[in-house]
Length: 163
Image 1: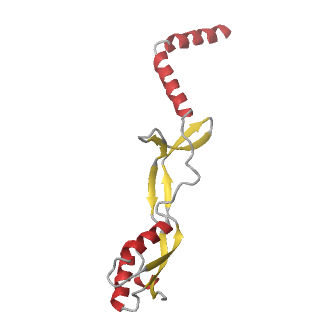
Image 2: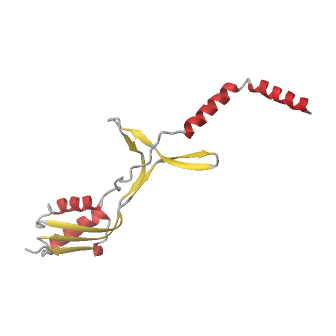
Image 3: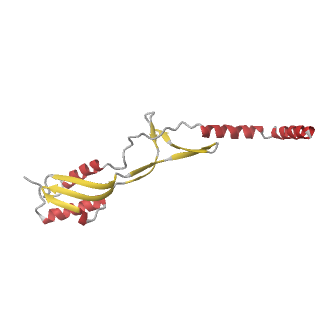
């Protein structure tokens, strides 16, 4: 029985000689996949659109409305938006590991590859402005905030700014 096993092993080794280069390439490819150079995304990765930035942008554009005067805006949000980073999933010895994919930018730095981003979900807005006593100005401001945030008119309050 020992002789049969040796003969089978010799036969297997002889037939392996024909495909050894293909097996070597496959093993090298598997090794490259098991040892990527990806790093986790930075902990302080900014949200898709920051609420404060949106408030500032709204203030700038709404103050340009005829009769609005100085404008202050406050937005409330359900979330700050979601950024989903592209990941590679690696399978090794029964373990599954996910690693973020990075790409090199022009300045020799690495940036996490973003798969998708969603804007913040706004719950309401308060606009305080000098010209809020005029109904026409209030209507224009409500329409603008609706267009830019997706809020409905009943979730937007336009109030007169104190002197």
